[in-house]
Length: 194
Ligand code: UDP
Image 1 (spheres, protein in one colour):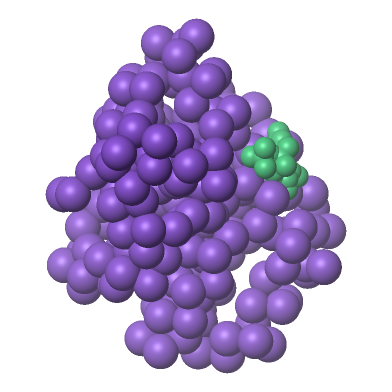
Image 2 (tube, protein in one colour):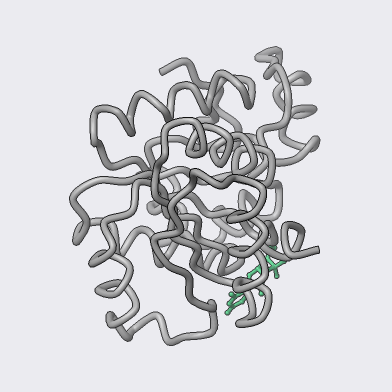
């Protein structure tokens, strides 16, 4: 993996397009892949929180979500080509999922928001299989949600619980899954729902 280290975190040196292509091969190989889309806030939080830092360092990929990260990389003399935000990765992943008839689970956001986002995805990407969806206001200690999501065997799990809650959920839930792309996507469902 070609990465750039900023404040102790290895960012993947890639464009959105290349990155989703990479994720596509992980899906084809039925692997488990944890993606953190990291903005400067989460990087600063992680520097004060060892548990969070360990979770981020344990991810398969950390992408540069925010111009601040891209600018820092440039100043450090290790330039990154562009921002790789959760929203952009999600939209390209949905395009790929539509082409390959993959299944997607939507976890997070308010009840009405995630429902609306699922409806939008169904109409804009008709070949995407919505494995299921659930709002994001549940107790992280309750593993019922994890079991429900796992039972649908999704190819892609979009986790929109806000940072670092979404990274925490992925980190604790992933061991129970057999395969899938797990990605924390922040406020993406709010944008899709409009
Ligand atoms: N969210 C959630 N559960 C929570 C907190 C937040 O599902 O306990 C959702 C919220 O509805 C929103 C998304 O997480 O859709 C992103 O929230 P926010 O913008 O606060 O996080 P960030 O973009 O900073 O990751």
